[in-house]
Image (cartoon, rainbow, N blue to C red; front, side):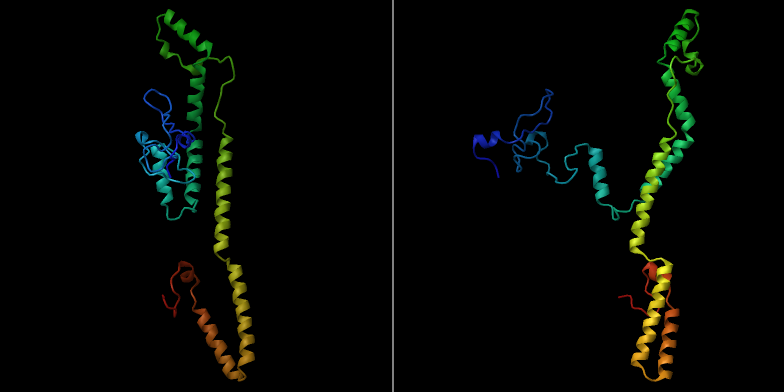
Length: 235
């Protein structure tokens, strides 16, 4: 609801968008829009729909696009792709460690006084200063190299995500040991129920044999994949 008094308008937050002069826009937030008091004014994009959410205030277009992509992910809680990405980063880091460390040392030594002194001497001797390799200069301070132990941080993150995946899967599936115990329990209960209900030993034995045969045709792989087992309806 729009404020009807001057005092009410003065209490509203300002638009705050950067103007051409480089100063924050002093119009009321949402001025000229249907969301007065919130968001930007009409002149600074306020007519765009205001989105609500944890990251709704992010203005970088690329980030907003990525948020929309991840929001439409059909399986947002699946972190297996993150494991694959981290493993790829670890491999790439290790494979390029020497190359990156060498580049960092060269860059670091270009700030050393001895390097610049060598270049000045080369100019005085009418030599090309660019031929001086920074690695040929003895530095006045220790070189900075890339810490290979940072790989351990990646591995720790991978292990943490894998552990989360494993725990999530354990809550949704049963181990073979648990299934075996389930079979044993069901068999015992079935035999007890048959003895309580069926007094004819021959009929009782015939039923238990038929049940055992039917159980033997159950395909666990088909059940795990969601396909109907033999004799079951797809409905």
